[in-house]
Image (cartoon, rainbow over all chains, first blue to last red; front, side, top):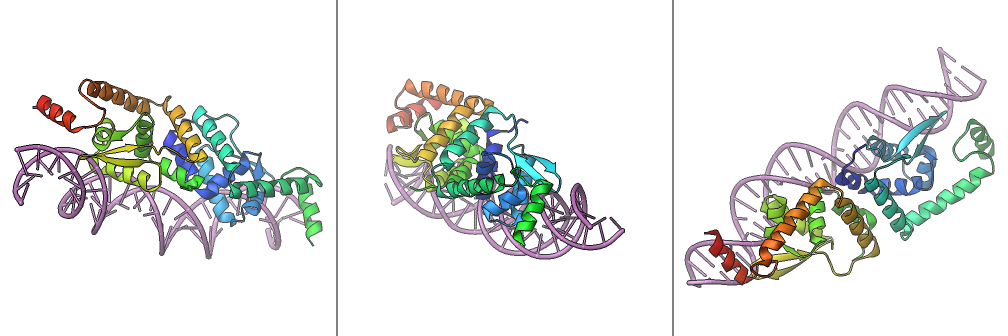
Length: 131
Length: 131
DNA sequence: CAGGTATATACCTAATTCGGCATATACAAG
DNA sequence: CTTGTATATGCCGAATTAGGTATATACCTG
């Protein structure tokens, strides 16, 4: 619960982690969606999520087969300030903006047939559509 | 001049660099004073300064024997935001507060006999006093 | 020029980090 | 219990990093 400033910055000094945090700032996401939006291999995404989770920058809950990650509900002042700063800066950066745009598309697409993240019903629907 | 967000955070993810940036946030400082305040060996301080300088987070000017480091006059919005955030957070942290306190002491001590950083006159004065 | 002081750099090493491959675990469906 | 899907982890190698020692450079003074 008590992170030093350096530890916060150590979490922020990797591009993939920044992109993940930017996306989680807009709401909870499961790993497969992060993977899809980031265009990065599963193992890479999963490891960075584990890194963030181990340091309290992300929390995970299981939902059936899927792991849904989100930012922790309550965070220290330092962390909150830095995440806010990140969100601000990300708004100006093409990479982060593109990620957010992809997230929006995905969210809208999923809204047509269920909850944002992978309920069993959504799975069947997706399977039916993709074949 | 164009730093990505990650590059900024990479500069911030080392404790010594954070302490240096916190001190430079209060004004220019020469290496020997940084060394004294931080209580770190010369080579360590010097290397981190070189690191920051190479990435545009610090600028150096020579003043006789001494190198005076400071934050760059104009910086990108992202950098400015993050440095401001750092200053805010540092105000709550005992390590950074102690550094700032030592800086204050040093500044007051130097104010009695010249400019903050090591003018030739100050050198002679110091030499005279320390023997 | 010589000697001294302040700072930077070359070089080495230990430690850490990141990414990938392969494999393990957790759950759901049949 | 088997199969398939989603996610996590163990292990490895390449790259980077941080710190130290020794040395170089830059400047001042005499």
